[in-house]
Length: 130
Image (tube, rainbow, N blue to C red):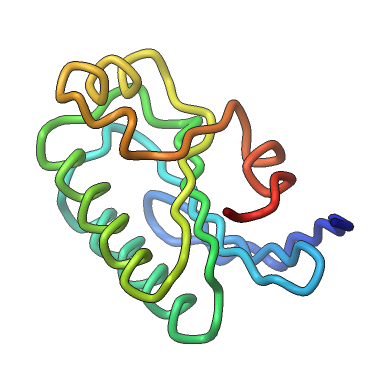
């Protein structure tokens, strides 16, 4: 597995960035969140971006949660919705750089084992899918 990492021009939108990463022949969408993760305008935009990337052929989605200090139940529901959407097209959702608050919330809801988690975005994209 040869990993070549390219970040294309980030698309700045209120509350986050969408990066397109190409690892070998596979296209990966990396979505960065900022602030508390809840269901709202920011997460809806990120969901729409993710869906566009899935439609264009990306099969691995990495959520960069390094700027997310905590998450509420709506945010957890959002993550589950995204996971289901990615899995419906045969893709993989990876969570990267989770804060202690996000990790604790996923552990309390017993959803931590449902997600594939990594210490960083680099780690998430360097591991082959599967």
